[in-house]
Structure formats: structure tokens, C-alpha cells
Length: 436
Ligand code: GDP
Ligand code: IMO
Ligand code: MG
Image 1: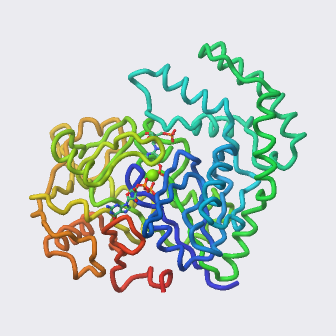
Image 2: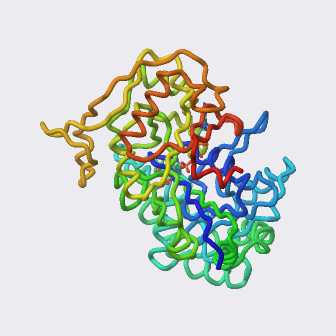
Image 3: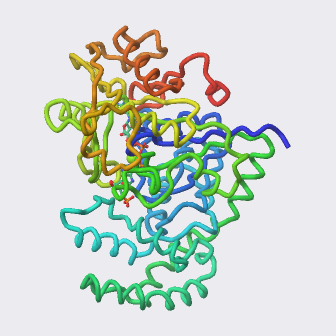
């Protein structure tokens, strides 16, 4: 067996950190890119030149010709949306013949999306603020052992039989609990037949494909979706997504075992954003928040919702580093901070009269936590053309160094714009083996 050459890239805040950009950049040196959790709640943006791609299921490695792209068993897949995503890519001459779907990935079907929307409506002011893509109900059915899986896309008879078994219960819940009209079996079969014909040839034993690549020394990237604070166990529950978003999930979500995981790169914005409801200690609801939203174009890739914005929070970043075992940081959107007189960085919280520097175990306490800021001088220069760290203004370097120290993990990559080219790898770096 050759040396294992793998890197997990995860979000270390509340999602939308720029994982798509970082994966696309690193994919130039990768043989395989695999998604291991989540579904089309993810919206990963890749930009090069005038090309902008918004990916929801498909790994951000797809734009790199020849890279094997896998949708792992830990994912939930909406077949109708995936077909549209593939058509969109093919229309733009992107080759999708290297994409495979784990036979064990669970399907998001029409009733999951309806249940997600109805549940949110019922919660009213207490809603989670989900993406409305049916993610929670699909993972719930998986845990309840009544989900339908990608393998069933290959055997339409089996899918029809299983859907006929499960649909009456789903309709009962939709009708009796939510007053929804429910779904008709024949109509559903007609809806899914063409999509399954398109996707069936892609269904495969992706765990085996991945193990072969890993064991032959190929370079394997794992693409996380969402972020550490949206993790079902470790995030700000219940304001979280329904999957495990941390690096360790790359093992169970692809079936390669823990020996296949070598390093974990945490992606963080140089500030913080969040979409949906839930606690966010460094949120800025006024001027500074508006500045970040406008300059950072902080509107959701999947739902178009304005993102809540605030300062960088080293308390949550340290927590993310711990629960992910981060070996490096990728700091994105540093360019967005240009033009601020001062830049704040939260190093601890004041919580019920005491000062704490670790995220409280009981995350309900977060709503009572006030950030304690260290304030840094800002910079006016446009940094979007910087190609090495030393090109950055002194104030930006001091801010980054303070961020690195506060998180306790080395910054290995700095992003100064959405384009592939606007990326700096700090030297020396373990990422060199990926890019060179
Ligand atoms: P993901 O979900 O983590 O992949 O992130 P999203 O794609 O949802 O959101 C990140 C947004 O920021 C996208 O619109 C990216 O094109 C953009 N972006 C990524 N890195 C940078 C950067 O360094 N500077 C700027 N200005 N935009 C960036
Ligand atoms: P990427 O991969 C940001 C948030 C939703 C909501 C909560 C639950 O682009 O970073 P869900 O639909 O998953 O049940 O919603 O999680 N959320 C995201 N926020 N980026 C994402 O993905 C997200 N995926 C889910 O806004 O608060
Ligand atoms: Mg996103």
C-alpha cells in the first residue's frame, strides 16, 4: 500500500465560508473529490474568469477535467435537482462522465421537501430557517430505516414497490398533521422514471473506488458542506443541519475508514456570516453588518436570502479547530475588509458575569454571551491582486497573524477574491503537494 494522500476541507463557521472556491483551487492537483454529507442545501460557488458555477450536489472538483468526483454514502441526493445540475454543467461543456453516486446515498423525494416546508410553517417564529430542500426529513427517514436509496434508482420495479409501501404513511402525516394534499403514486413514478434513467449508470460502489484511489497513493480531497457550527451534534442545536459536518464524517460518509483521513483544512471567512435562525454572538445588525453584506455580496447561493454578518469569532473558530482536528486554515474574503477604519476580532466571551474563552458546552448559553473584542487598525488598499502574503498591507498581515494566533492553527491559504487566481498559499505549506 502506498502512502495515503488525503485532505478533508470543511467549513469552520456556519457555512458559506468559500469551500467551493478552495476545493476548486486544490482540485487542480487532486485525482478525486468526494462529497460525504449534506445534499442540495449546499451552494458552492466556483469562479474563474467570466465563468461562475453554483454547485449543489456535484463536487467542486468537476471543473477540473479528469478528476473523479463522487457523491458519498453520507449524502442525501435529490434526483430531480441533480439531473438539472448535470444538464446545466453539460450545457456549459463541462464533462460529467467522471461523476459517480454511492448506491447507499439516500434519496430526497417530493414528500421530504413538502414535510420540510410544512414543518417550518408550523414552527412559525421558532422556525430553524432551513433551506427548504427536504434535508431534515430525508435524514430522519434514513434514521427511521424507511428511506429509499440510490441503489433503487437502478431497479425501477423495486423503487415502485418500496414507494408504494412508504407513500401511504408519508401522505397520512402530510394530510393529518399538516393539511397538505399529499402525493399520488403514479404521478411520482412518472416524475422519477426519466431522472432515474439518466442517473442509474452513475450509481456505483463509490467506497470501493475511493479505497482503490487512496491505497494506490492518489490524491484524494473530501469536500465538506455546511460548517462546524451547523453540525447535528456539535453545532448550535437545534439551529443546525441534519448531518455530521465535521472532518471525521468524511470516513463514515464515504466508507473508507479512519486511516484514510490524513489532514483537515478548515475554511473560514475573515469575518463571520450565518443564514437562517440561531445564536450568533458577533453578529452586527447595523452599519458594520451592512458593510460586510454589501462588500462581501452576502446573499445565499442556494436560497438568495441575505446572510447575517458580523466580526470574526475566534471562540467558535477554536472550537471548530478542536472538533475537526484542523491541521490548517484557509482564510477567505480578506479583500472584503478593505476600507474599514478598524477591524474587530472576538477572542473571548463575557457570559453571565464571567469571561470565557471556550464555547460553552451548553450552547443555549450562547444567546447570553457577549463577544470581547480585540480591535485592529484597518487598511484601505485594494488587496485583490496580492499573490503572496508579503504583498498585503502591514495592517492586514497583523490582523491575519492575530487571527492565526487566536485560533491556534496555521493559516495555509489566503483568499483575496472569488476567482481561482486570487489565492495565496502561505509558505512553507503542506498544501504545496496539492498545488505543485
Ligand atoms: P461555500 O458554500 O463554502 O462554498 O461558499 P459559497 O459559495 O456559498 O459562498 C462564498 C461566496 O464568496 C461565493 O460567492 C464566492 O464566489 C465568494 N468568495 C469566495 N472567496 C472569496 C474571496 O476571497 N473574496 C471574495 N470577495 N469573494 C469570495
Ligand atoms: P454550504 O455548503 C449556509 C443552514 C440553513 C439553516 C440550517 C438548516 O453552502 O455552506 P437545512 O436545509 O440544512 O435543514 O437548514 O442550516 N444551512 C446552510 N447555511 N450554508 C450552507 O451550505 C447551508 N446548508 C444549510 O440556513 O439555518
Ligand atoms: Mg454556500
